[in-house]
Image: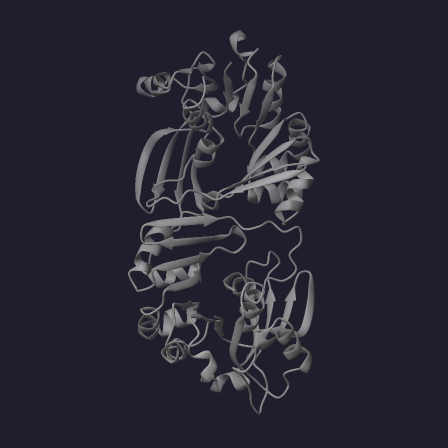
Length: 238
Length: 238
């Protein structure tokens, strides 16, 4: 029994007040899979280009992550670059080169299709729906989304999450999706959209889990030093 | 054994997205005392004018709050008015009429001076120090402050909190006081200033308690409806 993870695999250029890295392994599916690999067998579905480094494949493989679903095609790997504000609460996107990710249309390997657990990273809702439809035996499926899909692909997104067991988003996204600023009201409205479980991430403040008749709030662990928060939400999801 | 509470007693005019009240009972010492009265005998030290309503004295007395230390003098009671932003995370001060509070120079009644517990609401640090000096038998003393005193009366404030057992401020004030944006570093720096216990309030996100060798984080209780957050931090302190 494995967890299937679908989403971006990328290279990131990140600048924070604490330093700068021009190119490092990134992407939602990468962070989710690496974190999840500490708890369960994980199978990755994604796409990379010819520039995807052998050492990065090796890192994923070293975590026993199944890479049969990671397509390698002609072209370059998705590249994102951004710069964080002084307090690291905001970030500015400097470069988004979709490259081979622009044509990502995930086809699950036969061996993945009967797995029970599915975590959909933040990608186009239609692709998330297509992946869900390929899983014939699922017991728990859900995932993430973002403001872009909530604002500009709302109907498609609603049709997608209707079939999810859980949705995992941050507080700003929950407000945007529900139209409610109060978190309990926002959660109630989102649980009416389909998922029976909603996880709302609050960055450094922690996270909240909502179900129809209960909720649970947990504060974030306090770190002494924070260098780079890229992928933190995806690692938490994993 | 009682808790002595020192601070403002005021009338507030408050406007939020949910409504507006032109004049209601407010003030840090009021909110602290009312909240603390549910747990212990409380003795209030403050100042009001001739316009302080009999029904407001009666409310405090009904909570068994000792009012011997509440001076009533010629003039008007401190009046504050403000308006909250749409998400209630910011507020704009519209009116600050100090009135009789401008000459507040707390002299503790003899019966208060041997009490063991002291909670100093947010007032001028020199006045907080003067009150502390009048308590001969204290076992736990501390209080609140704000950005104005941190920025413009820093030396006086540092000389004041040096003798406190605990300091209770919000996260923005902790950053301002310590010069550190990371909460663990901020807390360590503040514990070096005197208090052995630091409580950092995080608004809707909850609060954190720091001591030299440990810390504890608690999330905020989620309310279904929030109408007015004026005095919330003082109630929590109480």
